[in-house]
Length: 104
Image (cartoon, rainbow, N blue to C red; front, side, top):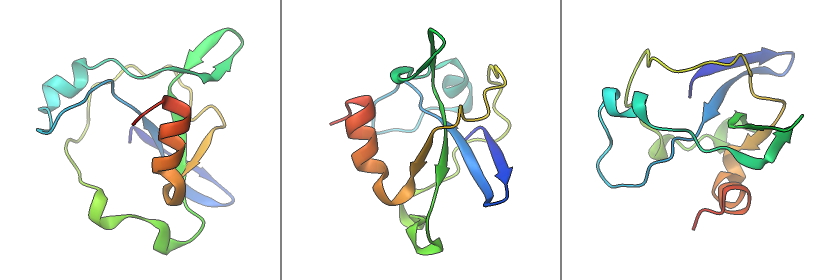
């Protein structure tokens, strides 16, 4: 999560995926150096985008057991793309990541 997006529906995290695979969570300094995953499904105006808003339809959709704070106040490049209008849902996040980013 890199920031928040607020509208009439509430406040939701704006997220960006790091291009990283592993079992041990990297340090804050390592996270800051990781490239982000940019995919064509987010392509608009010949630019690839990596940010999306992560939403939920119900409070019970939030996966408390699967989330963990790993760093605060990361120094990241922000191109002022507050989510590019794309919304992924907690409830179907695994399926969406697999389909959109080809995760397995």
